[in-house]
Length: 105
View (cartoon, rainbow, N blue to C red):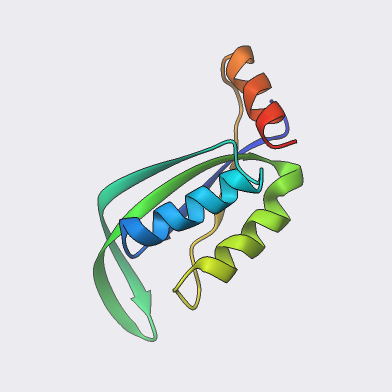
């Protein structure tokens, strides 16, 4: 479990999120990607407060895969500065964690 990570990435729409998710799983950079539509983001960009509807990706991966995953996200993402926030997974069922590790090898 010490190596498991959850990565948060937002995208402007489901189509782009699905493209990123599929490639990440195909390349074994992610075990699973959940796509959550209907997110409202409020943020500062170029000195202005912005509000947009976005899609959130919850990407399950490992510490070892983070560098390549981030490169893939940057390559496929339409944003100049895509969100890429990494959280350490502190716990989970042992069966799921084994599956996660195996899925990205």
